[in-house]
Length: 266
Image (cartoon, rainbow, N blue to C red):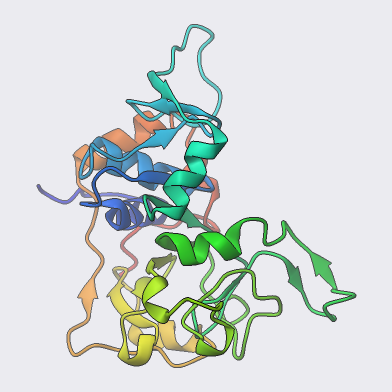
């Protein structure tokens, strides 16, 4: 397929994030947030038609729902129902892949969705909370989307509050090993990374067009492993852009990254 001539950074990130769901077969894809949701939906429409998605409640879909408001006569493509207990069956059997956007990610891949600053008893800022993330992080693959890559997110030292399990032997729950952790991809406004470096070090997978290795390292609070060959993040095709536009008819994706510049910043 030929790369599209023009695309935004949000669209580049959606396509890059969709690759984390490719070739996984029949697993429950959970995209939390606009870009993750569109990424999972794009994968279901292209690289992984076996991906299971819900309507964000309990109905299973044979076609992903568009995001945002819909016409009064819109009929979702529901094909079955998945109760709460069945959701947990998928979680505990590693038949789920979730993508979300934590506020902090440390060098171990531990993330923070709970609190910032202060102390455990009196944090400076409270957020959503850990919720089910501790168990999810050792039960199935997870990926992260970060719209603003900087040293506040990728902070030196541990997260202010550890909400999920990462590649930190000191914090592994009893009966688990590092092999139980599967942080698939980390997609940011600068690059794509994973934790496939030496000793599970975070490593660069690809640079978005126009971004340098130095920019990535300067905006990460700990060393990033740089492979011998640094790839460029693949540009969307026009077919992929057409699918994204249909899935996001109100262009909510344009508001997920500051100023949403062109995807190619060369």
